[in-house]
Length: 313
Image (cartoon, rainbow, N blue to C red):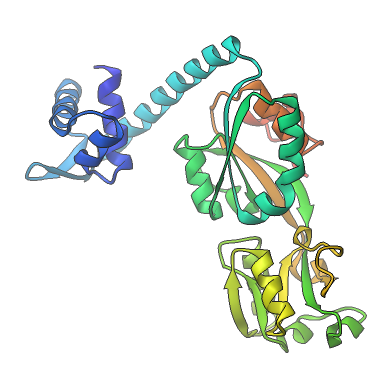
């Protein structure tokens, strides 16, 4: 048994059981991958993959257990490599953040700026996607951490910590009748065409749930992943928008007004997520502390060890 065999098994699964693609991803030959997997199966005495002819189609029951062990082994190897790199260079290296558009556009710029001033030698990358996609980036070691609203909290294999709370706001043109309401209701909002987030983003499920509970069916005119797109169409007079509060800036959005609606849709919690068991370089701890001053390395390490007692908002 050797590490190449374990890598081949993991990559075969990641490439949807296509050994040609797995070989390309690992810069080797398809026959070599196939031979190594067969040799590992022979050594273990079980079939890891189901087959149709010479093609693999999926995992067997013991294969699923083998894959879990492979993932743990490869994660530990990656951690050892990172330990070596960190002690060789404490203030340099690479750091990849996976996040949603809202976080990247409105929350992270000042944090990233402060981080880069502290660690100018670190190569920082930002990857964007929906919450499920960015969670998978961390699970697959394509990113060191993910930042999104609480929908990432329940995803297996991730440790998540709360960053900050926020509420939705309704955005309307400066002369809109909703501005005269002392306390906007769901019925008043539902009377106008709505422009808001795609269902995968920024607490959209809470918006939908609130209307369902009241038996209302709002006219969702347009869905977008970008608050700037939502605001643009509101300015055109096509409807009213519902966006994350941090996405509204009174100076920048002078043609609009915002109405806080946390009393209707509840508070949202943005969270930072890292892979369970991952080795975090020291500057990643610093980044999380810059993002969330209520967190520190000790609390993060407690969370990583499974102790959730002291870090919930």
